[in-house]
Amino acid sequence: RKEVEQDPGPFNVPEGATVAFNCTYSNSASQSFFWYRQDCRKEPKLLMSVYSSGNEDGRFTAQLNRASQYISLLIRDSKLSDSATYLCVVIYGQNFVFGPGTRLSVLP
Amino acid sequence: EPEVTQTPSHQVTQMGQEVILRCVPISNHLYFYWYRQILGQKVEFLVSFYNNEISEKSEIFDDQFSVERPDGSNFTLKIRSTKLEDSAMYFCASSDWTVEQYFGPGTRLTVT
Image (cartoon, rainbow over all chains, first blue to last red; front, top):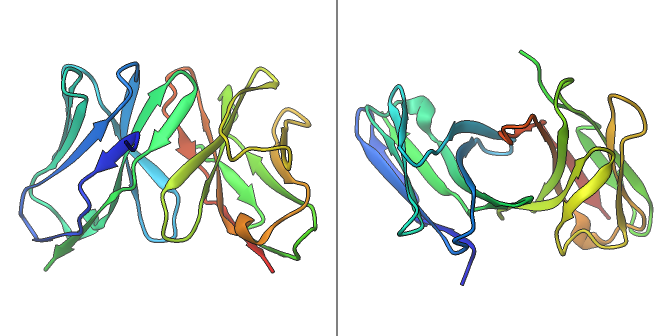
C-alpha cells in the first residue's frame, strides 16, 4: 500500500466553486501534516500546516482525522490563480513523504 | 522575505561525471533537505541534515550521493558518477524547528 495517497484528479471547476481534496496516509505514527501547492515546473510552496483541531486560512480549510488517517483541504470561492497541483505531505520522524498530488484547474 | 536559493538552475552533464548542486538555505534555519522530482512524478525525499550530519536518508540516497555544509551558508548535494536515471529536478529545502519546509526553485539536472 502506498504511504500517501491522494485523489487522482484532475479537478476542473468553474471560478467561484468550492472544491475539496482528500489525502490518506498509511503510517499511524505520522506526526506532522502539510498541504503544499506546486505550479508547473516550479518548486512546492507551503500552503498550510494541518492541525488536529483543523485550521483555516482565508478561503482554505484543512482538517485532520487521525483515527481514519485522513487529511482534507477545502478551497472556497476558487480563483483562476488557484490552478495548481496540491500536494499532501506526511512526516514521521525525519521521514518526509509527499503524495502524488491532485491537479486543479479553475476555469473562467 | 527570505528565500532558499539554488545554483545552477540547469545543469547538463555526461553519464559518469560528478556534479555538485548548490543551495543557500534561509539563514536562521537549522534543518536542510534535498528532494528530487523526476518529470511527471512525485516529489521524493532524499536526505535531511541537521547539526552537521545526516539525520535521515531514503533508499534513493545511495553511496553515489553525499551532502555537505562546507561553510555557514551553503548546503551541497554531490552525485559522484551520474546515471541517466539521475535526470530530474533537484530541490533543496530548509526549515526551522517547526519543520515547515521552504523550497528553493530547483536545479534541473540532465544527464546525457
